[in-house]
Image 1 (spheres, rainbow over the protein chains, first blue to last red):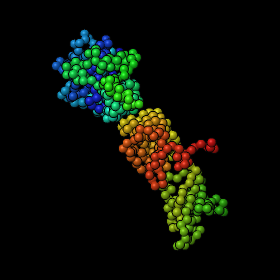
Image 2: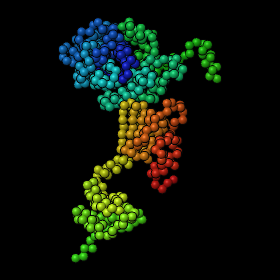
Image 3: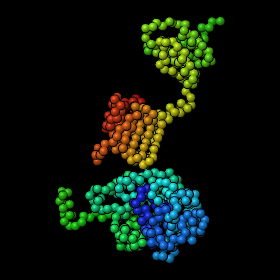
Image 4: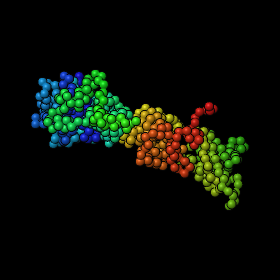
Length: 267
Length: 227
């Protein structure tokens, strides 16, 4: 029996879809059978990031309306033999095309066949959000270290705490920029966790390669040398229950001279 | 038959006016009749007499609002009398429950998050934070063992005596009864620990160190006997 994990944030643009794609990929790389469900009906993205957009035949609404079988709508990721699947959202409907009861049934039907079902949640707290959390057992909150994002995450946590079937949510802080942390310009990791008071499951550094990878239609998690990829793989291992220590985000000053300057300015 | 044996209405003089003791075993209509008779019999008031306040004690009789009004009406017919207070030994279960709710401390361990409103009828002891955009509201005092970063509204039913105390006081807004205190634009990084807010005589909300409470709200102490 698998586990359904919803990946949500409240605010848009903090990296829910990127996180869903990379966690799904990382879990599959660890040999788990994973299905990604895109619930962002009308504004789907997950298929693009996974590089699967040309292969969509049926979608989430077709499945819940009974126009096709679940397996017909699932798109297999060809990087793996039989481990990673995507259930795409339709682009031509809106969030009200699906209700919570249908989502709950769909996910409980799928759970026996997968180790993990990752549900990519749309931004906002309306119907789309309620659909996404309806069938979930666990929740991962994605936020950046900016006040607006943290505030929205706080709101979402409040809403999730009311859902009794969902375990207390865990937190991913995305796009941490080392140099801003260093200059004390950004809320730091402790600041965010102290504010939200939930468990931290991972910290993802900011890296241009993520955008490059998205444009190349291949999640960054396939690249074994990238630090973002490493961070996602570590989160995947934490999801599996391993205890992996948090790697500190690089706060190294740029060069020897600046290090020297810092050294003297502090004294 | 001497009617004087059983008096349903007794008038007693006290320092601050009359006290009317109404018997609780006779019927209400009988009581009203006798009250009227007694009040008109006794004394003719002069034009320039000062008004006299009357306290009414109804013993073990429960009066609903309508009956209270009727008694007041009878007394107010005497131009110089006004009812200062209605006293009774009894109250309804609802009133008792409300009284209990409004006087008890509700303890909660929770983070009040953005968009959440948490309300209690009496005092609130919150073990946790109030995050920005979160609201706590209490009929009485609010004590927060944590960071207050959202809105706290103490005494929201109009209790000016209510206070707000927090381990870390960095609120977006403080409200006490009908008054609102907006936060400064910037909090200093240090120096907002263990503070309290209360209302002074001019209805300004004052934010001060916790130790001043003993002076301004001595009746917050529920300790009997003292230290």
